[in-house]
Length: 326
Image (cartoon, rainbow, N blue to C red; front, side, top):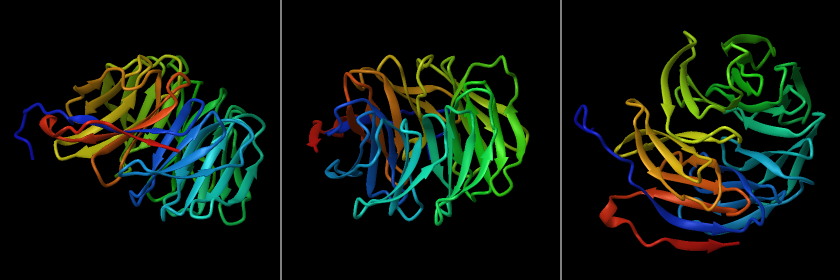
């Protein structure tokens, strides 16, 4: 543990640049077992990479339009994806087979997440609804008239009982996953900026939200109170992802930025601990943190459709970047 008050930095350094998409990288997601990284792209494909050394593994195909979000099942065997083709698809990663197509949304599907038990998938759409799906049957269990503008982000809490949804209407809402009932509205001011991202903290007690005023906020679920605010990145146009990350140096919140940077905040102090300028040659929308190792993945938009792996290393030990290719 670091001494109280001592400022530290996560020391993220570029380890690998992964080339395989020919259009913008919209999302990246590490598998829960830490072995794989999935990247979704406007080129309508999902690439699977080795999460440690960046080696290309496979491409999952089936969507007829760009992929906006990818999520893994708890056993790291399956990936679900949300697409502009108005569907959510379920893939077997080992075989590349498309197992199910979840159809029902009437507009772009912008976000999707697996429950930790992997029996449910939640999706959010530009049609302003949130849908809860049964994975085994592919049936829609609930269609929630959740918001009055496009739904930008959804997430399950760790026991799969709650769903969080964020929307361009400025609201962040919490739903009972089994009944579809709205339990709480965390951000209930319709004058607030569009909510572009939501994620439960690993312990389920907090919710991280991003809004299009360049602000990340950490909310205490039980009280509905904002306990932390993080500013320093640029975010006014795109739905930029964020992630909770852990390294030997501390606990962090990682996010992309519209000035092409990767930003890392100290979770507790809210300090911008590291800013990697020109992390990509275009806007950094896609970000995720490895569940077990001190590794962060990022993806760039159309002028730089690469995936990059960043590793926590002492500055003196930072190795020369290497390249992987599909």
